[in-house]
Length: 327
Ligand code: GYE
Image 1 (tube, rainbow, N blue to C red):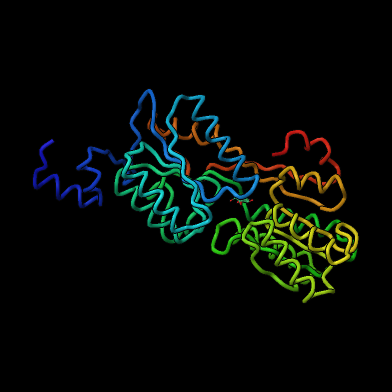
Image 2 (image 1 turned 90 degrees about the horizontal axis):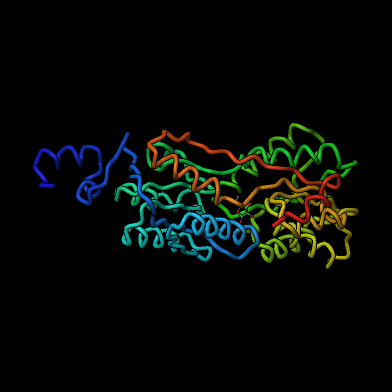
């Protein structure tokens, strides 16, 4: 295509000059995915230091393999800066679409915008970006994931029914600036305030990691020996908190109630063992839904801004049955 002055004006008017040069098409400002027999797809993972991430990656790889697509996989090793660089490298490699799990809400905005500018559709998986800086249907296709506010609320509601007079809460948060940490805190803090009679005596990030969760729990248990409940934003940190409680000579599930989110295998096992009170499931098996959404996009369907995952809830009533299928 010869690039006339008129074309250039139109292209820059929609902010898509780079994409027009590479022959990409936009609809409503969003890059379009052309229908092909096979695709080269990017999957920019944030980290792989826990069972949740490993299960998610496996699910994506399995589905890509089944479809015969080439999956360009990167692991940002817990660095938002590396994840941005990973996306840029996928753009340079000319992938057809990018699945991105934005580690934090704000730092991944440049990656979303760079892909958009290059005419490559982005589907966000499991974490969202800052909604004041980028929007579904405009800057990226959609967010596929759980309702984190609701997850936090469910953890609080379980406590409201089962705390039996225990009331002083240590909250161990996920990665600072990540959408699940922000929203699991919001949902829990609001619902626990509404329930009445509870106090959050300390709240600190454990970065969604078992070891950080253990370290933070160790410090906070010492600083607040009166605490009799620990709420963590993810099972990995709950496992760390349980280890810290045991090291401090306290019995998790008796002296201190622990509640969490994720429903990973170790978490479900801890419920069976009576150490963890409950865990709101957050299903990491994204492969089928991710690629189904991609197929809908290729058909030209308008995708809703949020493709919601529906979560289970585990406590002593169903943990044993859930164990064989847990990740
Ligand atoms: O709960 C946690 C993981 O973003 C929803 O990230 C995901 C969370 C998940 O590290 O365990």
